[in-house]
Length: 268
Image 1: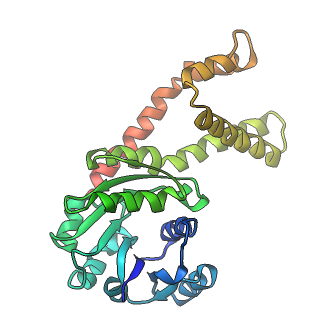
Image 2: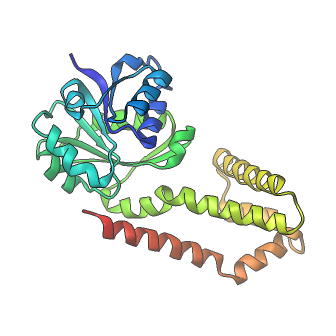
């Protein structure tokens, strides 16, 4: 008997997707099976979510209708060799394997595989993920819709052509680290002004969180918002002058370009 969802791999990102599933109406933990070789980790997931676990990826391939491929890139070949003979065109495989293109996945899993590729980010684990979704040539519109529904339960999704995935990897995949770096810089800057370190981090973090929330909910134009806060002769304008002089935008653009370039180099 087929279960609804399976996982090849049960790391933190897989857990983020599982957490998203728990937000769906009518979710049944008995409908999920996860492959995890480490007994302690398997017990943790079973205890926390009530899902079934197995050390055998083949068992997942035999029993799940939709499978999330959530292994490390270097483990793809080994897992694919074990499951390729078992998968059928009635199953959907959703890959979150970093850098592995639909073409590579087809070669690994067979030309008939129904594939959807996803580029998630770590914020999925907090229920505020950003996931780019791309259906393979054998994927049905309903497949893409299902993936977006599941992942959308823990954040936002956008459907994009695969050619954009290097840029997505740079912007939203690597973005949490860049965002945290900006928060760190603001917190450290606040501490240098005499603030207690804990208070400086709280002030930086909540300011970034609240601003992002307001911008999303209001749909405000970014340039107009900045101009509205940075009134002439005020404190914000003084700070913005320093950002402009340091060519902050160019630094960010170069950061993203470097990450996208590395993503392209790692494609296989």
